[in-house]
Length: 305
Ligand SMILES: NC(=O)c1ccc[n+]([C@@H]2O[C@H](COP(=O)([O-])OP(=O)(O)OC[C@H]3O[C@@H](n4cnc5c(N)ncnc54)[C@H](OP(=O)(O)O)[C@@H]3O)[C@@H](O)[C@H]2O)c1
Image 1 (cartoon, rainbow, N blue to C red):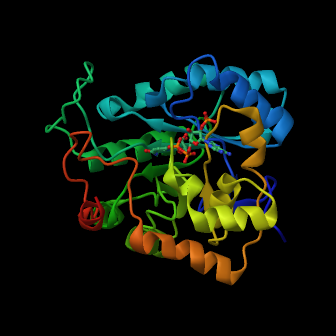
Image 2 (image 1 turned 180 degrees about the vertical axis):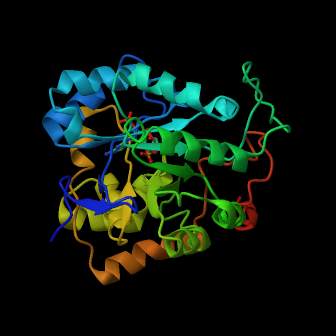
């Protein structure tokens, strides 16, 4: 059956997660409530991705309410902030309060990068181990399943995943990582999938001012289907079985356009897949953020600069 906004895949918890979700990173204050409301009420989205670090959980919650769509019909993901690794339980209560919701469908460890708190001054906290934070997430989840239905990770590279899998009591439901034609991260994908963890693609369009939106292969295929290039990039992610994707927009027409998923032919899929052999870029590079080595292979990206 063709993939649509109504399509879902199963998490390892048994819960269903809609394949396409609305991203909200860098959605400007004052625009995100309207974007969430539009996505749910007019465009038919049923999955919203936010994070404490985006500073917009409150507005996202207001958008959900304004849409009139019942809470139980919507899948909401939020994430534990880097400078909250030392206060996991309080961070959950904060997110619930900001979103004004009795529960979160999926709560992610945003980055395996504990930062100094409460100042959050951009320096790593060397006294904390991100794996202990994961264990605390497990504890809080197991004690509060009515408040946090599933837990997962984000930005886990192969060595970090392997370390977690050796000690995890709860296998993460999701690994949310950057995935688009110019960053296929095939090794991370393989290890994540082999562990029974669902992949969610972030920055699927290549984020702001993405060169992928004007890539000749993407534009050619978009013309054939009479959709926007962004819809081809979303379609490419969901053409991978068992993968969810988070296109972000605060522009109503784009929120609708990004949901026009087409079924790519195997030849078109292969053509898009090839883009990553020559054009490589990463939107979210932890080393630029000063968080140290998080185990990603950045060598090819350096070569392509
Ligand atoms: N876990 C993590 O660490 C992490 C990191 C990054 C992202 N994420 C999640 O993934 C989501 C998506 O990633 P992203 O925000 O980096 O980027 P993205 O979805 O790849 O791209 C968003 C950009 O593309 C523009 N855009 C959207 N639709 C378009 C269209 N049809 N035509 C032309 N331009 C279009 C948006 O502009 P307008 O909004 O102005 O329309 C925005 O500038 C985030 O919002 C967030 O929820 C998670």
